[in-house]
Length: 67
Image 1 (cartoon, rainbow, N blue to C red):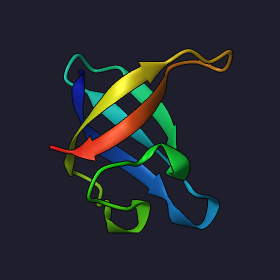
Image 2: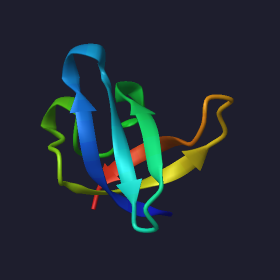
Image 3: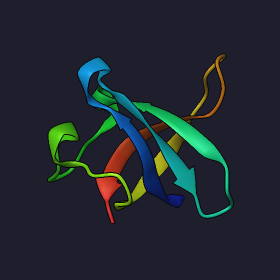
Image 4: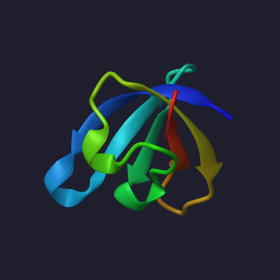
């Protein structure tokens, strides 16, 4: 399971971006957040783990959990 840091949150539109430990950016939608943390509780700079999901628009993260 890759790890990364929340780089940017667009709260009013319900999505954000994670920068993984290798430097790649991953898009995620609020519905991809799971575990004991909600989208509203996420903060920029917070460490998370996630799974990769295929997408025609580029790298997408799913099953996001606080690290």
